[in-house]
Image (cartoon, rainbow, N blue to C red; front, side, top):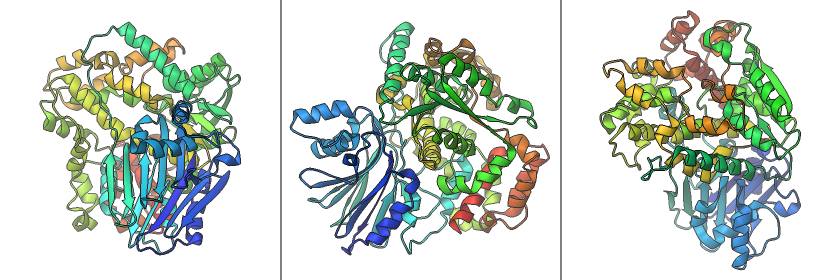
Length: 624
């Protein structure tokens, strides 16, 4: 796990070592164990190392192939690198280190971009071909590791974080208002845009090539999700046994490390099951939980603290357990750091993740996370059921698009962005939503097809947003976060697993009078434990039944109460004083009216308030 960066001067001007040093210095938190630079003429690659596998100097990067043709800067982990190494040794390659990075280098030299499909892991990489004068950038299938790029004038720059790119002297920074509109629609960014104009994120499952001689730049998708009903009949028991085998295999694959590994333990079944398997390999496995002070919480938020369940599972699996309790003021204290490291606001509140990573980083360099289980196995049934009775693809888009306006609807959005209406009038967020399916088979014939479409959509967007948050806020503390659910074999299984094994109540939902509002359907099932049925059944072999049968609960703080209570002065000071940078773009009267709805108890606007606070802190950090 590391940080990568690089520069190419397309006009042939030599790379400045000072500038490349500034770029790698900007991401020192991603790799405090070492740094490296490679410069030749108008090309430079930089690297920061967080040593996890083969801690010796043999793992130093950028790494050069034996024939000196290829130069690699690599970030990530390839969990099947030993098998690939055996294949490569059989055809004559020899290795100087025990790292997965060297396997990646030789694999790309031998198989070209076809090697990307062989990698089972998480990665972002840059490979320079000295012979062809060609740069290859690539990102893993699921987008667990980020990679950004930008071109200004004759300079092409890339990096694991935007910090590396904007560290160049003279890099022009400008707020990307269309991307901000996209964010305030979905609390996420679905396109390859970022909030800084001109900086793009390489999409998950894609690679890009840049020829330094012709300046030709192209991106290509090499992998995509395909959630499909199976074309054959297999018994539920067979599915259950195969899932158990693949889950164990996935966790055990990701235990490979030359440093100590720990695990998050939220109290839910995903992290609990990962901990159960990992604890079989490590005595006194270190586990970590963040809980919340609920003394001022109310309603559903009273259930947000999962520490008691986590403590019970820690005792069951004999882990060395550590906890942190978050209070209202903790959000205020960490917000500038969160905005600095997150760079682009994404889904959810984010700051609890920052503290969880901070806690884990005090004890380990690698931590296992349960991210991905919900998106692969149907953990949000109240979402999918809204779309199950769609009449056709366009009808499905209309229904699901309205639901995924997470912050404000289009009517309110128009009021909020009135000051910059002329700059965003060409942005149609419904089209952005629809374009998620641009390369997908949109022939939909039965309710299961629509649910599989929803699983596809959420894996491409919501899960990707979670991964951006997970990476940035763990690496802020020089912590590698691994996600066993995103093992290639386990993902392939999940995509072919029948909807009927994931959701039990689909037939009942379809019986509901179609004249009932979509929200009523959703609320009817919101408090059930209907999702992830086959996963629940399999995990019952490893963790207590009261955990596997529990209702779905996210990792969320009681901000709805805090924003009206302990944090109300902070909210008023940052967002209602009239001094906010955000009001250089947004309409203050429209925004504060929505905030008042929350403070007065008229409407729960906690996600919007968090997003406004996050963007305000980011604008201050960027001096925009």
